[in-house]
Length: 405
Length: 120
Image (cartoon, rainbow over all chains, first blue to last red):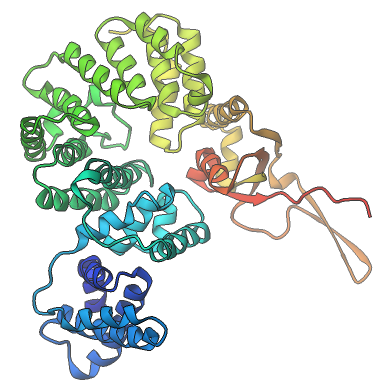
């Protein structure tokens, strides 16, 4: 393998870990990033001649630390504090690299940082994803995303956001922000790109959730989020036919689901439940667990799903839970109640919301109002990005009114 | 802020318009998109265009008029239509551009519209 390839591999596997270590000690993102990229460049320059060191990560860390110390000394004339930091970095052990990514997760999702920047910042610093890719995933221009990230990093420095795990009192809220950012990364990976989604981004979100479960084993919502994502991941192979056609959950073949993942999800749901504090992610995971039971019990327990949705609606003001509940009401045999519930949602919030129109079409079809169903689906198609989903909805639109068997 | 969404399509994409098998899906997707745009209340103006084969191009070079049949320059993706929308920012415009059918089979370009020229 050539040096370039080795460096790239290290950057991919260890970037977040190295950066977290440096940033936590320097208390400064930008300085840590500069030092790390200097070290990577240095490796690229030296290694072709000297050979790749036995412990390339340790080597990079040593070089980056030296850079940070130099930079801190350089500025120490103005700020005595930096000198102290320089010393801390110098004394820190290189041999054993503690995993500081958790602290970095909390920094990236700090409430003082613009909400829109939190998930991208996390992806860039912890996973080392490049800005262009992050911008595409979040459907933002690369220039805007770059600006957003730079602003967030300077804000961390300017506002003096501490690189530490928060105090117990702020714990629930802060963990919530971290979870939301991870879930945003997952959903973006799931929705974006064409068919099948950006599985790498989704896999990275799952990776972060696993890391979090390991670090915070007694936070039930962390397990809830991991379980929710595992349930979705388990269905990846069943979401599309061999010809690439979209298959909704109710028509997926359970034989194609990944039961190792489902079992892991179930075990997290169960462990979370024992901790006795319910929350949004646990409820959503629980709903998915009921669906996953379809392999062994073909009839789905809709009443329990409705109960979970009621609890979910009581916890959040998002319209997603209300739409999910309407779909569940329809399946449990009361489409009219579902339609009434959909009609009560504020019209300006649903105007451009694709899932609302898609669900509305289904509910209307079950109410035997084919003309209105067609109109709702038409609207849903216009709000859809992926061709497979568009094709699925068009097909339902064409066939509405035909007898359902 | 006003943005123009320019829908680029290749010759093969445009040929779907008159292909009896493909035309319903082609026009169906565009009709649904137009309706979603209309429903959102951000639409300012817009038109679909006849295919580039119907275009005529004029250039003036060295004081002489040059008239060509067809668009200029020839490129793989050509303009199939455009909409002007009024949305808060580029992110919102990108969201609508991503929903356009041409974004999944060719491309959709987003350009901010120049403010109206003021009288001197």
